[in-house]
Image (tube, rainbow, N blue to C red; front, side):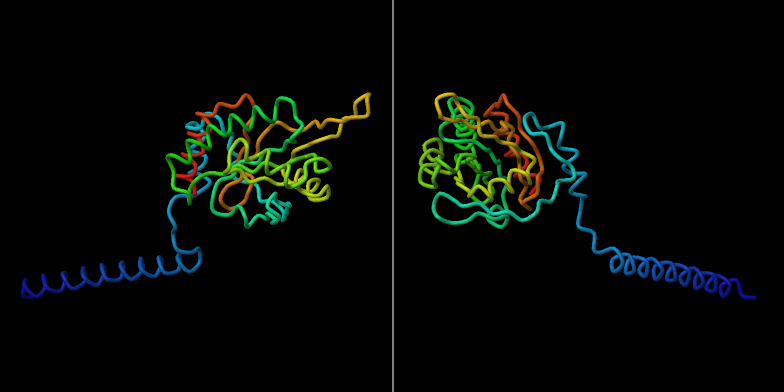
Length: 228
């Protein structure tokens, strides 16, 4: 047989094998995309897990915990729901306006972080703080709003009904209790831990005292930029 013909025949068979392999690979990719979905990049859970060592104040919860629906009456007369907080990281702090020390100290420290975010981040990505009173008996929407905005005008102030407050606190795993005094007055005991909600409205982290404004500002800025 002509050696040139044998060479051409071998080359043709090689081309057919390569084409068959490419078709098989293409079919596998098509099946994978339709069976499992189009690849969307790094796994968000793994991405957040890898960020834990970089955070100095926030304790991330991975995977984040989905929350049942909730609603809170706001100081401006509106109502906050999970949809209200969609799109940005949000810190939630329970307190009350008659609090002698923990609440004003916490809000003052957080206001320093809020000031940094306002000066360094676009509003669309800027983290937020939501202050929720645990004393709706005395803290009307007006009182709550005036108190929270004294520290920072950017704070979302909520004065929920007792029923809204009980459901919301339970949802986040936070506690509060009315403590009566001997003279007929009362105070409120409550969790000092802050809950961090991610842009999807899930419980994604915790912050515990003592609070460091710089560390909080840095952590939330990092999360807003790298874990949307």
